[in-house]
Length: 316
Image (tube, rainbow, N blue to C red):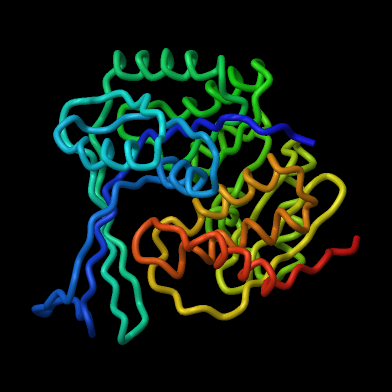
């Protein structure tokens, strides 16, 4: 059983998630906003925030722009998240989600982030080194901003694994492909990211299962594949399960994948079986999908969701 421990998340390209509600949104036309809200986010920030909601001690590091750092600092203070972010010149990027509640669509507009310098990257490595002393879990998640080499995650993974840490990787593209050789403890691609990694389409459940198992065979202990309404696949070296949630009213997709990562880590720290890991991870994702912005439903709601999730073992 994995013992209770502190968790650090590393987010190199965080964002302020701006949700904008526009009924009957139409490209090329004048659109009127019903309401809007802005939330500090980015994949690792979200994971740490959700884990804090679940009662865990979390630390956060990465890069944030000094010009709009206050919205992040307020979140860190509210949730007692230890702030080890490196401040860099400029503003943290803004990601806009246009929510059309009538047509039930969500349109994403993602901005680029500021580029850290070589000195900024060196400063971040020092922050990570300091976190190694009292954190057993590390989450590397999100895209790499301009100025950060593709092999950054791979180098950090190698360092953290040599220090005996559990490392969860949630990224995509070249950053994911490059880091796989270091065999992180767990990865969580969605279907599109898994297809991009493999360079081919996955047209059936069996193909997804085989693809996940091929990654486990490379030394990764857990592969989690999020599949939208079809649920999520959880694969280890000894067993595989699929967790399927009940139909829900999706209010926002912001942070749903990050909530799944947070739920998985929480479940592993508590020593859950793979089936119960799948239940808690999927329930936590549901808890984010039913909220506006990167927020989590209350504990009793998550417990109710866990009871509604169907978990099926994969034989063979």
